[in-house]
Length: 107
Image 1: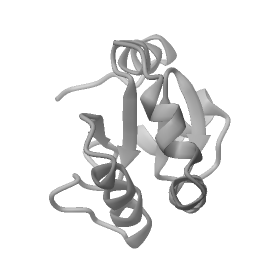
Image 2: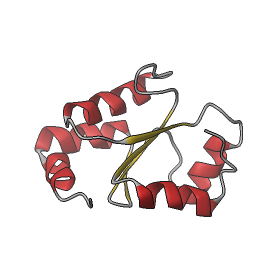
Image 3: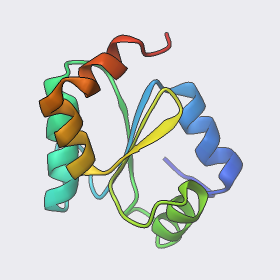
């Protein structure tokens, strides 16, 4: 996928997908432990999600972080809202809150 990493383009990705993971690498081949954890948590939910490999372009990380106003990667969006990174996703999963968020995902 080729991106220009504009705020409009990033918003479009999040608007068109109920669950989005901006990560280093891919779910099949994560390139850092935090991205691996985030993908693993989302995989446990057994719901489809979009993943965006932010290592494909040097503009990606600064563009995504500036747009979301969140300083680190990975970043998980559910129903258009940033929930955070892998640590937050794991905590929400363990408490059952993430499953509740997913159960009300837009179609």
